[in-house]
Length: 102
Image (cartoon, one colour):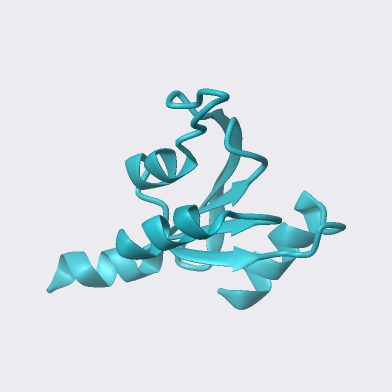
């Protein structure tokens, strides 16, 4: 169907700055159409709810420097990819990596 083809082309990838803030990268047909830092409205110190936020924005993938096993499993159960990135990787290099892969 046409809508599944559109969703394949329309990639929404959230790069994690921590559970409190996310750097959202929206890509369509190989081009970055949005780059924006977004506060996680579900965030609480005792339970950060990063997975709830990633699901709410319909992310396809979460890039993170660290993630707990429960959070990773929760994301996978919702069909979201997770990718660990090196601690020293900055946003510019992450953007380059994403753009090269798509």
